[in-house]
Amino acid sequence: MTDIPITANERKAQFTGNTGLGPFAFTFNILATSDIRVIKNSTVLTLTSEYTVTTNANGTGSITLTGSGNGTALISTDILTIIGNRQLARTSDYVQGGNLFAGALNEDLDSIVIMMQQLDEKVSRTMRIDAGDIGQNLLLPSQASRLGRTLQFNSSTGNPEAGPTATDVANAQTNAANAAASASAAASSASAASGSASSASSSASSATSSASSATSSASAASTSASNAAASASAAASSESHAASSEAAAASSASAASTSASNASSSASAASTSASNASAAQAAAESARDATLTAYDNFDDRYLGAKASDPSVDNDGNALVGGALYFNSTDGEMKLYNGTSWVAAYVSGAGFVAKIGGLTGAADVPAGTTAERPSPAAGYFRFNSTLGKFEGYSGSAWGSVGGGATGGGADEVFIENAQTVTTNYTITTNKNAMSTGPITVNSGITVTVPSGSNWVIL
Image (cartoon, rainbow, N blue to C red):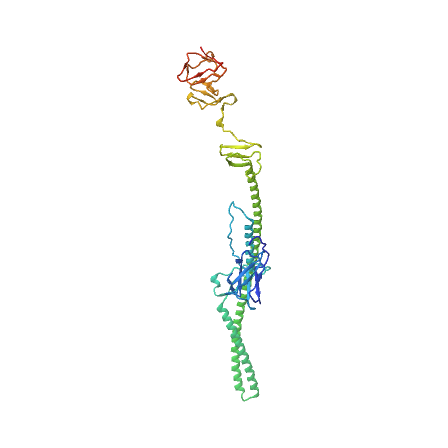
């Protein structure tokens, strides 16, 4: 049971003079049926077999005796007690980085308040000092010094200390009884002496004998009085010890009161901790919500890896400009420009490198004739076998911007090879010129379209 208020009730309900099986209601809140203990007179009853529990929506409820075992119907002299019995333990745990649910936190906080109320009810049944009393040192004497002795309170400090032994107390009681008996005997002897003196006055013949008897009686009375005085002294000593024991008991009560006050302070501190935990929960939930919002915003911008261009974002909403995703088919990152997906970047491997800044040179591909790539119209490269730049026209590789050459700065000679090793077709409506002799290898064809000429000088 969760999400219930824990009201400020004493966690105890007691029924006297009742009869029958119940139900018997309790007004304090519980989270589980095991949170209470039911006691019939001095016997603790067993849940289910000797009583059942019915709970209300707010955690209060009632118990009904089953009529079996010790759970038989109450008679008017029975006392039935229901008290809180939640185990003083915490079985839940919050995982680092995991979700913090309000229901779990509420149940933990409810459990803390319930356990504090249980301790408060238990403290109320202890001997304790009055809240207005001056605080004292209520530490008990050591075990060795208090063995077999009564507890008393120091007459000056009020602190607990070891009192007389149980034997001393018994002897004091015996001496007091003896003193009382001796006092009674002395009174009887005094009465007998008075009677003897009266007889002496009326009978002169027996005066000597009566006087002797009076003397003996007086001697006995004196002895009895002496015994009575000794017994009275012993009684006074016992009374002193009893007073010391009473003082020790008062000091113990004061210590118990201090403990109760400390328990109340601890309860207040626990309540403050619970309040702080609630505030921490609110802050954590706020941080969680902010994190989820930030993640959702990021998830709307970076859509992850996909095999083709997506038409909506990961939430199924319309795409926004600046969104990114990685095309796993093409192996490239793409950017949404507001209307279509375009490449977010181009690999530098697909461009001619620039060397030396704006006044340097372009580093174009270079290689031998045998290293020519599979051609496409517009390809441009430096042929290291021929020692010149060449380009592919769409049908054949040809020299690019060679012009005339010569020694030093001379531009006199235009050179051409002497052997045709690859099929070649002169461009339609174009003329070609070569300096002979020219050899066309076997199986090689040079095609001169209609309207074109090939002149060999």
